[in-house]
Image 1 (spheres, one colour):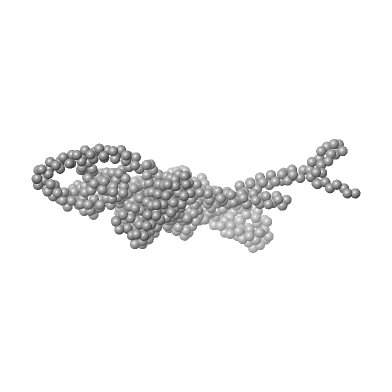
Image 2 (image 1 turned 30 degrees about the vertical axis):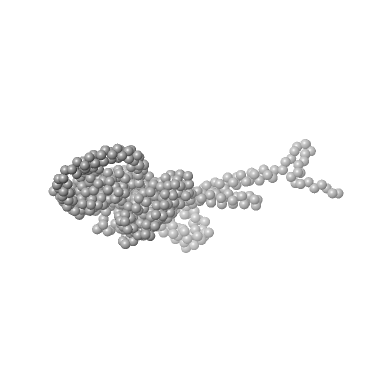
Length: 267
Length: 340
């Protein structure tokens, strides 16, 4: 039996460990990708250095660039046979190029990109982001067959795009604000529309959960928590029968907290 | 008196009816081991997906916009018996969050700092999309994307961006609508990129390489003919001392001084690309004209890339192209202001 126990433990441990090993495994689809990225970075850095310093590149930066460039050449030679070496060369080159990029940019302060900076507002990006947001809501609206009219927002998207293209940033900014407002109200309409079916779903979920909770409470000794939980269950059932889903949701949250305490005491 | 000691496993004997009895210890052992092995395997197989599924995204896709904001879309397995799910966001400056549950229900979500509490109520899979402004920072011309990713993910970089630094190995790279899309492993990732002339990493062999042998041969023949013609003309001209060369020089100088300044060009044409502006500045500093080959050398661009840039500027009415000594001479246009 001892052997059997050791054998079983071994299977369990190996099974657990092997799956975690698999998830950490690294799979490179095409090692040539590394070369393409590294060569491009090499060109860009060279370009950047020439633009920034002309013919008087500081010697420390030039040394780093030479090391990076050599790593790219080594990467090219390593492929396709020595993929391991190629990966090493890639990381070396890219880290050196990264270092150069940071060194050449040290004279300027780092800035976090914020949407609120209107003076530097990229209207095109903002419009694209809003369009993605709109597409998500549109998709939900269509699948739920809400029938909500969305043509006005689509028209405004086209208008804003045209305004940006023609350099009318003020007009574009106003149109974007209008789109935002319409999207907010559209989201509310979708939520209102689907609230009936959502309510049914929540009710069903809560009633199922109440059955399970009741079984847990039956096993536990009578305490203040059990009494509170039973009161809450009765209250939730009443709220559901009255179609007060939001009230039921709120009470269900409270019940869950108490059930967690009860579960701990049972253990 | 000394009974023979017989090992247990040899105690095989014939019964009275002549039947052979065999000990069954090994069979029992095997009969127990196999179900145990199978049961262990089943337990491991059942536990592992549960351990790794809840809270870990099924898919994670990121899109970086040119202004550095990032769109995140993810699909997550959640506990169908839980009322809500607390999603760790990648930062706290969040816009446009949409959470959709099974059957395409819009789920209620409250963003609190860098997490969102989503009311799942029975959904086992939810998809969440949002925009975030915390993942990209900018220093000088260099943009830096950094993320500690909870799973493998795809990252679509903006158009015209070029990677200049990276701390991890990409799993894959594709070009989608002229944009680079990287597939990256989970964990810490930092990518530096900048916007520059070569829009994307060439997916195919650089055309300059494929045509280079032919070009050299053509140049050799044409060069020989041109050298012969120039030589002949030079000999003839040296015999005819005229004032025409001086006039030519004066004309060239006039052309150079008449070229309008770059600030005016950029005001008249606000939509031109940053990399094209650099070309315009160079031409302007070069006296308003430059050979295409000079531009290629200066900006280290392949022939086709520079040709496209020059054609783009010509279409915009900023430059005009003339043939001079069998080369393309690119000149800033003088009458841009009048036309505008």
